[in-house]
Image (cartoon, rainbow, N blue to C red; front, side, top):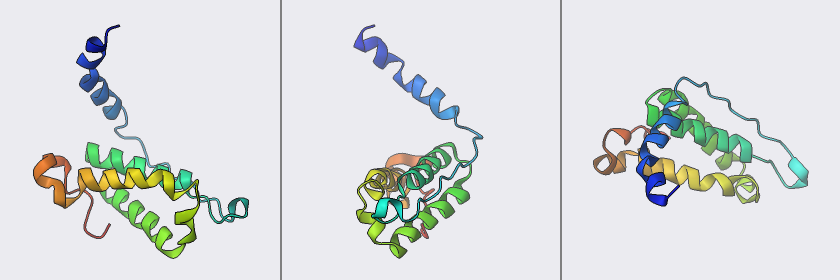
Length: 123
């Protein structure tokens, strides 16, 4: 298959994959407390919250639940600062959090249209 063929259907494949997430419930993972004597392992928890928020904001369903979950996640990091520095925790989800802010915050409404503004001010 040529690269042009792959790229030609890229948008359609993306749309199908994203729509396939519609209606799926939020499967929040748990924090592993006192993990490996290095603090708390939040990697899977943070990833589950960020991925659900991306799904919710893009599909415009579960937006309030996603914002509440993000507030809880960020609140955890504010209360447990050492978890920000644990190499297998925040490090991996920080980029996803930044994308959520870039794509869905009020600041980018003009650039991204209807998708923007779903990340609420409290979050």
